[in-house]
Length: 113
Length: 111
Image (cartoon, rainbow over all chains, first blue to last red; front, side, top):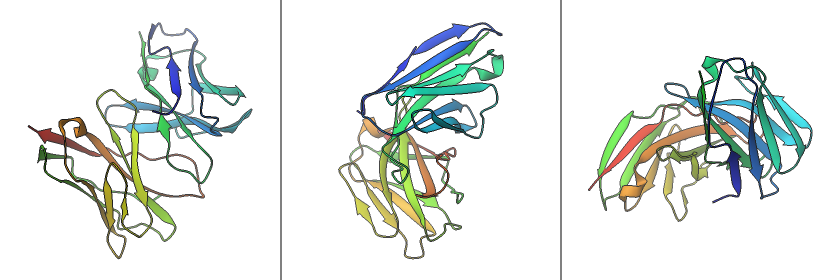
């Protein structure tokens, strides 16, 4: 398995609280991604990063922010969690732009009450 | 990115070859066909990809028709561990960064 870890693996929080999810890789891959997976929607891209301090929005970025201060870590922050952000969040990495073999982490199950 | 169409579900007997079809009739010349799978509660797993030639690796074979409008993923000797949702994705290697996962095919391997 690619060296990708996500923390926490499970989290329950209340509406309005800030939440930060962490993705950590040991592969030194340039690209990192955050997806969410919901029933009936498949996986949808939230944000991605193409290098340290270089990030861009995906298709469902509203309500989320990201940061990447070093190659190995990509943080996803929900500034004020809402119940619609209850989901399973997957981090993925890929070697570079032309490499579409994305390797996924184990996921974080987030419940917002 | 081109849209793909896959059957919702399929069954296959353990030990037999599982053949998963995918239609991508609007694929363009620079788009690749990728296959991923997702075993229950885990992150998606890359399987194989190809452009126009057939491809084989340790996990599977990918057969792409000559007109590239459809493809078939073949798991040669299916095991119970191959029970998963299989996603067919087409995209180029130069455009936006996201993988568009549709609803995929739920493959169940029957003992």
